[in-house]
Each structure stands twice: as C-alpha cells, then as structure tokens.
Image (tube, rainbow, N blue to C red; front, top):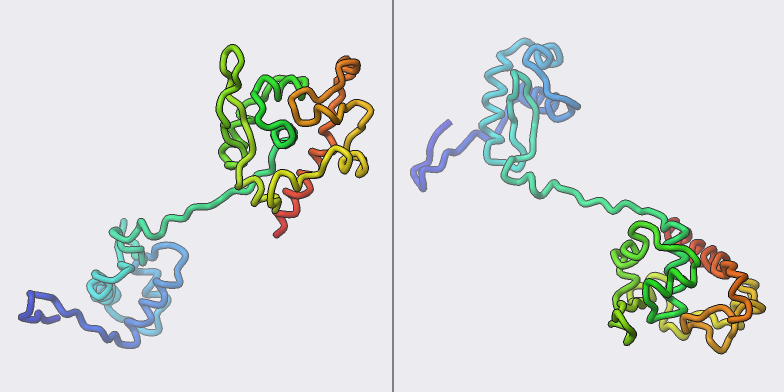
Length: 230
C-alpha cells in the first residue's frame, strides 16, 4: 500500500490473487456473515485468511459496498452513507370494502352530496373511515358546503376517479334507463325525475328501503378486480 503525493490520497491495490478472489466470492455468495474458520474450510489451500480479509476490507473501504466485521464474522454490506438508496416503498393492494364501494356509488350518482345524505340513502350509518378511504385514494373530494343550517360539507368525485375507471366525463356513466335495462336497478322503486338529487326513492315507497346499489356495487367491484389482474 502506498500514498500518492497529490491530495494525500491513499491508493489501494486494485489487483487480487486467486486465493483472495476465492475469499471474496465466498463472502459475496454467503447468505449470512462468516467467521474465519468457515472461510478457511471453503478455500482451496491454507493461507492467512485474516490477512486477506483485512486487505479486502481496505480495498472496499471507499466503494459502494464495504467489507465489515461484526462479532468476528465478516460480510459485505452497503456503505452506511448510501443506505438511504436501498429503501423501498411498497404499494399494498387492498380491495375496497362493500361499504366503501356502495358509498362511492352513491357519491357518483348524487354528487355533490353530504355525509348525512349518503347515510340516509344507504339506510345505515358510516363505518369507520369509509369516506376517508375514498378521499385517500383521491377518488372523492370535498366540494364546498351545502347552503342549509349547519353548512355540511358536500362530496363529489375527482378526475382520478374518472381516470381509474376509464371514464371521460360523468355524463358517460350509465343513465337510469341503461341501468334498468341491464337489470342493475329496479325502476319501480326509483323516480327517474329525481335520480341523482339526494332523494332516490319515491316518497310513496320510503318504507321499502331496499338497497338498489347492491348490483351497482358488483359492477364497480368487477372493474376493480380486473385492474388487480393487470
């Protein structure tokens, strides 16, 4: 090992002999740190393994990976100042709950709609984080406040919702007649003149309270399942 005069930089030897290459390869392929005895048992001839390890340690000192010794066991590790590059962000795909899909269906056809109106249409109170999940996906967003006592927040869909379901504009969504023709809703319990206004059921059939969204839920859910397979 010798020093250069310029900038006091240490020049480490770049070449290694065959036995040093063997030690290097053994350490590189090992699934866990190795002690000196284990390395000695793997190489082709007897030699001073500890001396070789120290030499390799110096060679790799300024590289992207370093040879390190922890508790008398040796292994290659990512250089500590580069570990940030090794972090990985994983996206975990989760299916929406039936409640979330049902809520999304109501918002799609009733927007802008308040939380209370969604609960009224569904006939049940919100589950934990149901609306928040849709907002985290950026499929739903606040759309101002309704001009009624209490000024409740109204919600509607976003451009990301259109993009995810490959819809150009909201008017491309199936109409009440198309949904009826496809057998997705029962028009006998729906007043087409107020479809999408927050008063979905005919007043004369309010006691029926059946969930006309169940089949629409299945339609949206099938679209999500197709996306999962892509």
